[in-house]
Image 1 (tube, rainbow, N blue to C red):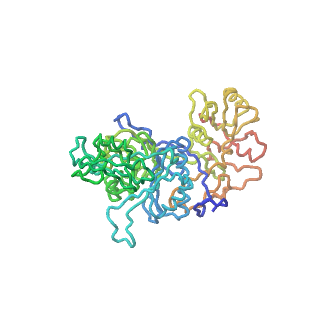
Image 2 (cartoon, helix red, strand yellow):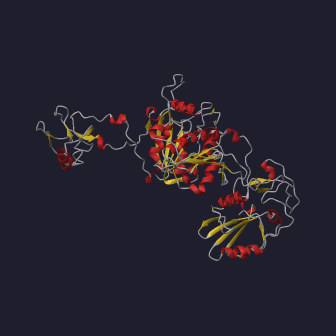
Image 3 (cartoon, rainbow, N blue to C red):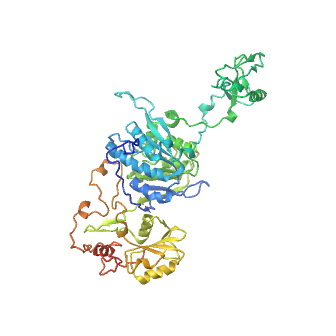
Length: 592
């Protein structure tokens, strides 16, 4: 408990927070796919399939998609201790909660004001995660715990009780701003409407004509009515008066809405409700397998899609369809950061929603890509295809997370990764500094902008005083420019419209550089704990040369990274030797 006495769930390591690096996304066009032609005006082509650690991927999406996602539906590893081939689904309790809490905080930032979060869970962690969700979203934004009957038959070998259900925790970003969509009526629900008296208006159902109010509470609802078949005056009980005023009752009589039973002799009437005016159904909190399928039917769907290697823990398309029916409308954006075999993306696509799917494992390529290609090409006849009237169309782009912007050279010094080209570097620094990457075709110094008059310029050069003055003149007095460069000469304060930062020195303490795995897998927890970005190289698990005081260790001959290449001399804005060392750079060209 905190010193303020706040009610909370505590666990080992709860106060630890990852310092996530905002990575850029790099398209792998070989796995992207689009329909050969537009099938309908509702086709969606801007969907994203991302392979990589889902926490880093969520961070990569934050700048562009914060506050824009209408529905997040996730099926995280349940922490059961059962090891699956594609997920290590057994993480020590405290670690599992910590890893899920980090993702919940990202979900909260990505959700729109009227967005909702749906989390599949079982008994192992649902009650603990409910408390964590209360902390992140606020208890007032808890909507419901849905029970999904995931088994069609009991487990006769159960030692205690047959576990036949899973849960869905449902939270709203702002419960007062969200209302669920009602669901369409089914044939079974319409079957309750009959026409025993041959009413020309068609099938009808009926409701009681009294309510739960007393005569003392609602005296205006306590009055006598006449049975037209017997002429008897009928009074309600004083403990359950009529449901409408006398004036409304007379209108009901005029419209022929009262039913007095087959023989017309009932002691009280019922009120007719016609099928023609029946409303959609309010979503309920218990979902039976006859309505949304079960795990056995989900496995059949998976085997039909992947005969050689079905996904071991699939969800039915029907259960995801119900979530998206309640929580979204066509064109809304859906996110699943535990995409698995791609069920959420496939259903969202068939329902005309935009989607983002994130998957760490190889099955992003082996399962998700081929499945979604079938959906787009109209070659997936299973799941909700028929009920949704799906004929194919649309597309998606396949992305991978870029490597970490910084890597250590052979001497343990942080340098820009050699895998970054100038365009990638400019985009990465824009994201790191909170700018939107938007390179100008006419102004070489505009790589991105944060406002209409605030821009950023990224270069690998050491800039001279004259170059800075030329930049300042080009920017003009009514605009401002953040200059990120290897080093610079002169006084940084000499130009009012320029802010100058040396890279990578200015960002060393920002993130956990070089860490690629925050996954919910035991294997990810067995290695050494990542060190802080500015920690000595020895703590990173690799030896480091010991340079003389005031001198930076010389980079290896093959370490020709953008900001890490050797230079004979470099004037800087800082007199101390360590700062000079961080500014060493060559002049290989701009990231334009």
